[in-house]
Amino acid sequence: MHGSRWWQRGVIYQIYPRSFMDSNGDGIGDLRGIRSRLEYLSWLGVDAIWISPIYPSPMADFGYDVSDYCGIDPRFGALDEFDALVHDAHRMGLRVILDYVPNHTSDRHPWFLESRASREGEKRDWYIWRDPAPGGGPPTNWLSEFGGSAWEWDDATGQYYYHAYLKEQPDLNWRYPAVRDAMHEVLRFWLDRGVDGFRVDTIHHLIKDSELRDNPPNPSYRPGMPPHRQLLRQYTTDRPEVHEAVAGMRRVLDGYDDRVLIGEAYLPFDRLMAYYGQDLSGMHLPFNFHLIGAPWNAPAIAEVVREYEAALPPGAWPNWVLGNHDKPRIMSRVGPAQARVAAMLLLTLRGTPTLYYGDEIGMSDVPIAPEQVQDTFEKNVPGLGVGRDPERTPMQWDGGAGGGFTTGAPWLPLGPDLARTNVEVQRADPGSILSLYRALLALRRAEPALAVGRYAPLAAGPDLLAYVREHGGRRLLVALNLTSRPRRLELPSGILGGRLLLATGLDREGELLGGVVDLRADEGVIAEVAPAQGA
Ligand code: GLC
Ligand code: CA
Image 1 (cartoon, rainbow, N blue to C red):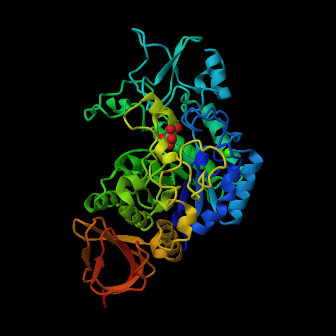
Image 2 (cartoon, rainbow, N blue to C red):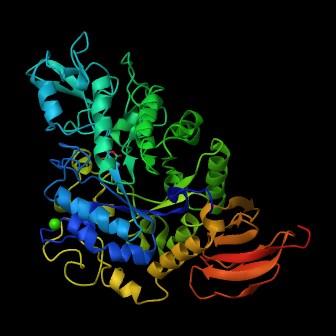
């Protein structure tokens, strides 16, 4: 793995801090809790943790509304506890990636309080203020991602301010140099404290059209879709000037050793690639979310992989994601049998995988009763199923009352499957999905072919996905059955046979393969294969 960087070889594990581990019984996860579970993460075999926002926040969007970029919310702990967490993580060989939320602050951030205090103030231009449209009303038709107009009227100063998300999340004006400088200082503050990188929130929103043109209607909008989808986000997202802002962040990171910049942008491949930047001077890893939306069948997934691999700029490093705190869990999307196949896919494709906490024990979306709803998105736009609480429920550590997560009342309910779906039970079960994740992570660590090797797809018919990963002459075959019926893969003439290293059922290790691989229903296997003589 000579020449590769830790964030290329490694596997990232996303922690939603409210829900990972509560150390003081208030029902909300915290930094001391995370620290107490580092041993688990190191046992599991991941390389880095990305922690969703832990900064002081009124929690209108659970931390994605930041009121102080250089502190820790008391609900999560304090700076010295953060330092201790980084120290322990590093000692155990785990890197720490923080969430960086540059697009907007909280409406309680001192910058915004000053900005809204008067039109003449020094910080007025730190946010996006505009007069009403000539006939009155909001300056443009722009819609908030979380429902309603993206413009909020401010009576005191007689102007509107722009918010891409909640009205409690006013957008910063990244065209204004002082904003960039201040936000670069924030990066340095955490880099100096030893963090290994950032996951940058909603990066494609950062710059809006300078002429404030109206967004066009979305021809594929249908009732039942979230209301903001009525318009295409042509003038509010993915503006050309955003890449300059990303490059500015990257220059800050490049002043330090070996840090990583990861960007969140839900975009089609052709747009996403630009976020690697001119000559790769942008994001190291613009998140690739396309497995989240893909229909779960072999041709669709093969096509996603083909398109992505083909679109990558030269030298750009790929990455893959199955879920996060904004999307339904993989278990609920594909069911328990295919969740194992999905795990094998995520951890064997070429590129850095990001795991979402709880997926490794097969947690499902937890049903949330109306009176339990916490997510403001759901409260603003009820009834469409947009709420994100189901995938944010507490990590299930054991089968006890608080699931080993809390001694108090958890902020969101634990899953009805707690008795089986928990770390304690699955750690003791050599056939569990947790054991599979751990075996996959161990194999990936042991096999450079999986971590950094070349990728070559094999023709495998409509029901199977198959590919070879190769590094330094060692070749590994991955064969995945996406159906619930047994299937046979005929190996191409270039491959003579091989030996099975890992199967999703954890029960075929060492089996020898001839010219075919027989896969049981919903089964995936990884095998070492030998090239045919002369091939
Ligand atoms: C990102 C976050 C999401 C948040 C939004 C606004 O999409 O992942 O949780 O609500 O940005 O910050
Ligand atoms: Ca707590």
